Image (cartoon, rainbow, N blue to C red; front, side, top):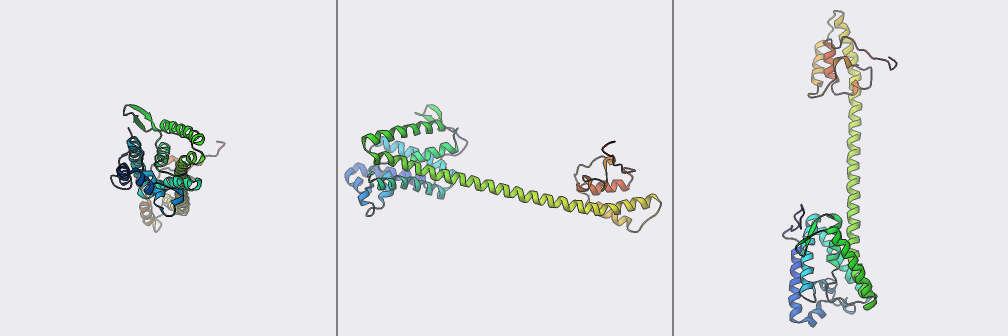
Length: 306
């Protein structure tokens, strides 16, 4: 399998203990199949006296191949999803998928004495939705994108549904579908809810930043419009040879307001407070100092018809 994510993390958490339970229950089942199935399988008539059966049924396997594929799928897919979501959310997903199978079996009066693969199927669909282009090596040789494996599994699930429906009845047919569907439905709702929440948060942040930027522009324009008549008065006084009081104070104030690094226009483009562009620019103070030094000699505002 090739992916940019660490699919085998976390090293601890829920996935590895769950895989261990599969092996422990399998060895117990091998020693006494009838007793272990009766004690840890899910039996609708004993659901309230053996409530652990709502969960433990999925750890039972009819043979080594079932154990291998169940534990292997749980380890690969579960490790990736737990790393992506965190242990808490992953645990809830696992419980929803598990109880989706056992609760539907309870409602339909169907016993479960082996893992119907409701959790691995739910995990496969969720994983394929999140990472559709990740590749698995089928038979450890053939690279196949996980989305195609999910489509194939959905087809097999559909065929198995009709097979069980006509061979064993509605109960066994619906249990796997309802269990797998419950897990994926939970994932779907959580995924889209989280996506909408993140989108709303991003939009709120943008709105706050935009409102802040507009407010800063308004404050900057107000400051520059109040500042320029003083600049114009000083410029006029100095051109007539007068030395008005406070001249150096205004220059010092303008110097403090200069923002380093602002890309200002050519002197000829400075319009003072005669347009709505210069007064909104952070370089207004720097251009005003340049204007006091005679650049430009005159402010020229062209009419649109010129």
